[in-house]
Figure 1: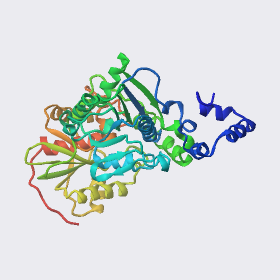
Figure 2: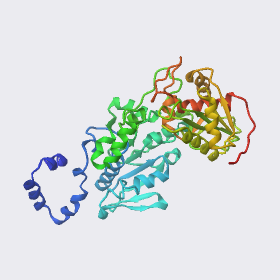
Figure 3: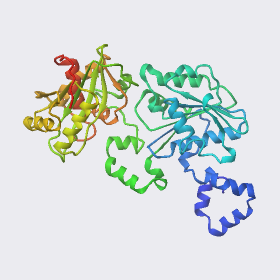
Length: 442
């Protein structure tokens, strides 16, 4: 029973049975006992049965995905001296800091006497028996063209840079090199996001070639601080962000929405080029206890393509707090224009913003149409490839994907405040009056 399901056996065994087992262990077995993964792993953290080639572990933050990946790789390496394992992350920095040296990474998840040697200059791990693992960046798909592997662990595949289909190219090059040994396999761990690569793996699961394991942050509650779990439930329970990041749910696109997640992924880039104009869009809240104050920074460069640069929105803030947050964002990004909606209390909006910074380059705008109607021409700019997201903005993107033609909003929260602030900024840059850049100091 212990070999079949050690965790269940330990939970059900009495003290006498456990003492008897411990008495039968030799000195080496007693030394290994605290490192025995079978006594710690939940059922969702062990490889699924079946003849799968790809194991997709899709779960919320804090589930234990990194520990699962590290233990799987360790087991593969220790069982096969000829194993050649690819470790692929969004970039080499994350591969090292999370997959190798992180508190749940390969160097910490293995007993010291079985721990591999890490050679940073070669991006290589070497186990005592000769098994090896090499680090790769998914942002450099060509680095995976040529090398051969027997196994691979791909971490946070939903975060991989998908500009110019780079994420899928990295995945394809990896699979084409997965041809060593008799049973090549790959583990992909990720928090779910509706990106093309994740969607593709889920579609392939129907063929039986891909096994899928799902889980939530709360599955690992026994190993997480109770205050953290309580705070996550209180702050994000039931929200769209919480369903994705904590419950591990893949949020699908709404049919007919102005923005889709695939569209946003096509418009994503890792960093912004030099910009000639920067605008901060503000959608003020009606009250301190109500909606968020949307504060979004956008810019445009010589290529005439707009970039979303930052989401500095603030929730449940007094007028003084959200005005200060807006002024701080404008100062941090050296904005030459701040555009604020003034439909509700225009004089008050101007007064609090001026109080936060007298020299704020402010322009008040009055909306003659609803939020969704204002968003439609901006969505067309995305479709035309004239807007990029320089980074990831989960809450803003959730709101964009909740805007529906005809005026309805079906995204998280009561109102798309972040999305509206983004629309104001992009309208100023791309559809409004082209103002001359200004330099301001405070």
